[in-house]
Length: 153
Length: 232
Image (tube, rainbow over all chains, first blue to last red; front, side, top):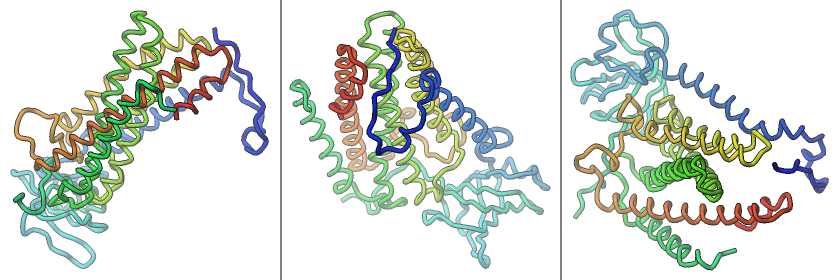
């Protein structure tokens, strides 16, 4: 058995030490309780964040079946089709492809500097009428390749 | 205060860290797509790797504690769990700093990111469960069980990018057989980073175990705090 912890007198400069100390039992159990609360919060946020169907993003082919669109926010991911990116006022229009199907995306919001044609991207938003995906959060999905800008000499 | 038997180890670790800095910042070129931000890989990946390794040590130590192979395993497992929790938090923080300029976001509810946070919580559970009971032996067994069970988050975290759709890219090195799609100087910087982090991690765990040994040997309360201060 560990002898009960006795609190030593601390210098009065730190204001939080002037409060009455928590009971020993509470003090010992507080860390695990906090971890438990954090785990519950993470679980809840992750569940709502990953969203319906428990996939992080849908493919354009999966979205093609839903013309009216499944209700609520979702993500769609694929390769940005070459020659499909056009600026439209403050919005950006482009097509995402998974090699089989494509989806048209109308994005309003910040565009990551690494975003370009032929690269992977994930757009977050809602599927609007006409199968146009209205995105307000655009993320670049880069590959697992790392290369120098110029070929090594 | 440096301990005599760690001096060569410290020197090697310092050398490895310097080599990692030079290769990562100078010798390795900037990435063609991501630019200079990609250099964060040379610290982000080693931090995650060190966390995986630390959790492996915690799980093996936990098994030794449950098999009653001596209290030293409890201290080794605890020191490794402390390192692992710190390294997981570091990997998440560095990943966020890397993600903002390249992905465009600090955070997203991607399976890899969620699994990494869950791994951090598993480490924290292992550390927090120890004090749930007032009794040291029961605390040690609780931490051992939590360490062995929590280790399950290591493969889940690592393979999350292969099992599920993620924004996070799949592994470039520890992955199914095939060419490693990384230019040699970049791979060298990554290897140097992993080596430096691993050696420094061993050093930190060894010091922490010695501090915990000293705290266990000393009869008085609050020695652990003094020992911590010495080791820091």
